[in-house]
Image 1 (cartoon, rainbow, N blue to C red):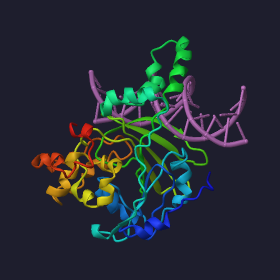
Image 2 (cartoon, protein in one colour):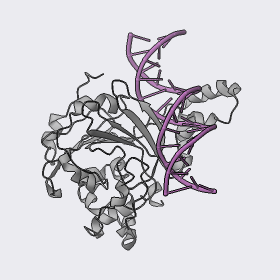
Image 3 (tube, rainbow, N blue to C red):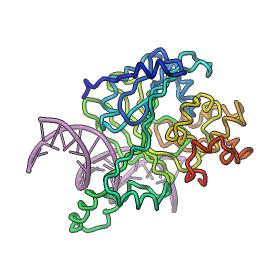
Image 4 (cartoon, rainbow, N blue to C red):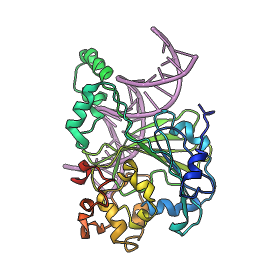
Length: 316
DNA sequence: CGCCTTTGACCTGCGC
DNA sequence: GCGCAGGTCAAAGGCG
């Protein structure tokens, strides 16, 4: 497990038009992305809307944290690294082959139910015990039968490695904590959050690296089917490379309005909302950023987002 | 009062 | 099949 090596594809690096960061970008698994953020560069996360009190610098050894991140084996990661603080243009990144949409669906019948429910219907719920919560114990048999047929769907995941003293980083969405577990070999618990939007199935895990307590690992799973409470901030989007945006999974983290911001607004909404920091460890209450999206809402349908925003999301 | 976190129990997947 | 670890649920309590 821990011995599992993070192997950055040298060929990919070589062929990538994006310069690799100093620390390189590592694919730590096969289904998802890891954004390793050297936090001298809180600027990066800051640009992503996270109000992180950047205080330390250092290199995050992705090899060390990988077991926790990709332990499931179904995730993979890409890291984005920055090498020049304060300059978006200098941000280096390396996008590994995206393997998104490789959902674990074993029964064909599942796809039917999924397609009918679309993104508005949490695909995972039916498989979870929550769906059976109201059922008497005698239903266990049929329950397990169902679970044999319908395997939990794993959405593409993205992990961010951040140096921060704040565990729960502000990202513009509202999250509700639904669980916390002790992590093996780690003194730090892992927290589980779910997007408060009932129609949104996005989840995120937040944990600290046991190797470097100053490092926070945030793993997002799923795709938001709605607008953020108000953000992601425009400058953050400037950091998203074309490669990233073209990846539907990655792009989905940024709502249509978000992407619009990239093109219509630049730095006018970068003011940090310090009051949010006051509740750093609590739920991420929405940041009251005004979206510039309203000014150009049609970009979604104008082709810019046509290939990065799923139809289901556009209506969101 | 509504929303959130906490926390113990339960479920599931996986390796041995 | 068993045990472990990760993931989730849901009741209870706290807070603004």
